[in-house]
Image (cartoon, rainbow, N blue to C red; front, side, top):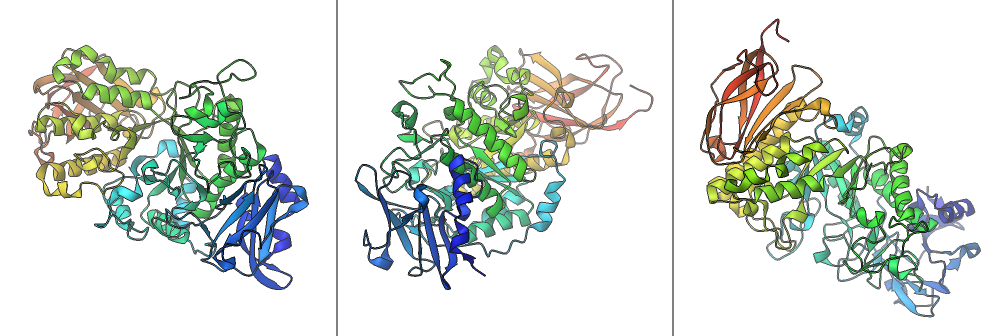
Length: 637
């Protein structure tokens, strides 16, 4: 039974929208199949408060710019029309006559589907009837505490994971292959770079137009729902990337929608994002809050996503971020007060309405308490990307090993603040583009050393506190930096060293999921022990990760030079037998095979590294060895 037109857009809903309190404005704005005066048809509703007139145009009326006027409901600034002249699949736009007297053809801000670029019209589309099959997955997720679960994210750009020979895009259904691949590789989540509609391929989706529309590059909205469903069938969570800080200036989009700065700030110093050629959302405007908060709810509720990543949070927090001239806030500071309030409210809304959500901040400054609860004065995010760790670590790994002892702090300093936030360690798309080189190509030395160093980097990343994120292609040693217009270098998997790199990452991923000590206590010093951070002369770092059970711990020795060390002493907490369970230098990973596969390591009753006992091990070159207690002798403390 269709909803009646008079019920879909009521005074109460309009009032909530205008107050900034609407969390489901997508249910009455945009296009909806309704019944009116006994007839089936479609309602079209749009917010354009300063427009002098709005008209519905499309193929149905041969793009006549004035034949189908919308009514400004109670002079609220929300314009609406009912018509039975369009059907699903028809294209449309709004002819918005602005307060400046200029007519602009605009796509629907709440449109759920669009034409394939370079065309820009919205398409009448409804996917409400999709039958979800993920109840078992969602029920299981209810009982999980995310920061005590493994989280190993595969970051992907759908348009360049694989590309067709003629440059065409793979459909959502064809990309099920990615889901199977990610599952096999041992990841727990897929994070997709923006999949909302955007006009320019080279923006990667971060300069968005249709915040409610899945990009038509890969198919229809219900096909993306099926993609999410398939992820959940395989036990994979899915996280979507959103740019809520800014939007592009394309004439068919949100920019000067009603002839005025409607979605963007009126003050040019706050509106303009000169670095990206975009404009910032006016986060102090109630209706913009309703638009964006409803958008968050739309993707969680209608598409069953597990989490979101908020891009460029710093540009929301600071008035002077990446711009020239700027105007202080009312207290004389550089903080964007309404931006801060918006972020806190976004997180409060998500946590109140969604079961076990993940909300990630890409925040590149030292803003405090990003992941602290809002009631304690924090921003309320679930996780923050650890950009400091990423920058220091990659800088260190690019050094010739002979010089690393002079920069030892680059690899140890992050442990001083590792628990100040709930961190994700990002080796993301941003680090392998714009001339920065691929991760493999960043490593120093000859080919063998570069592959060994990359395995060492991944080992260090896996034992370091914090959840994990790796960009697509890095798992098999992509040679070239990322190219958004081409597929990954899958042909490299015809070469031994790349096959073995992929095998290494898969095994490391499963080690992470199998060993509770690597994830169970990820945000507290209770789950971590720095056995020896001070061996800068040999560039060796020894760490221990601990689980909730005192016998559940893992020791990792990381050697950042190509020198093998024999009879190397490592402090351990208990008398007993230990064994090597994983070694990045294993020959099956294209290593030199300096391993201890068959050795039982007996603890010696002598203090070392501030531990009551120690073991003697072999340390692989440019490698990591993971050691676990095999048997604990009774009676020792």
